[in-house]
Length: 127
View 1: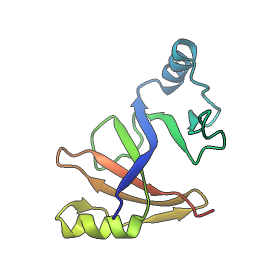
View 2: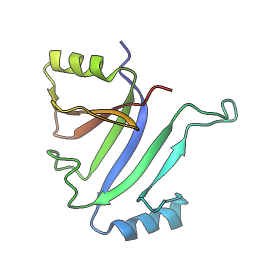
View 3: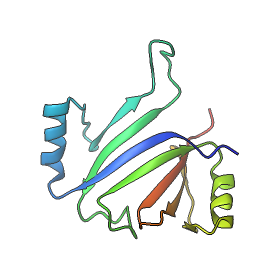
């Protein structure tokens, strides 16, 4: 079974999200959009159409989205089969969130790593 097949997103909490977004935009050239982040498409000269993207976003420091993790970041990993991976993680004794969310953006599940970081697992929508 394939497990993680890519990084879907990187999410960072900030005390001053507006200022931090502006810093990344000015100094690193990240094209921060009005919704608070940027999308990096996976296109290359060899594959100009790409087959996905990585999202980068800054959240307010008091966002509860990363809970129960106290970490100021969360990584979203792209997966091929969310249900199979969540079942395997449960069988392996991992701390898997019972909740799975579905939206137009795909399906999401979560697991905590041994150091208390919330890990988001994302199965993109089928074409």
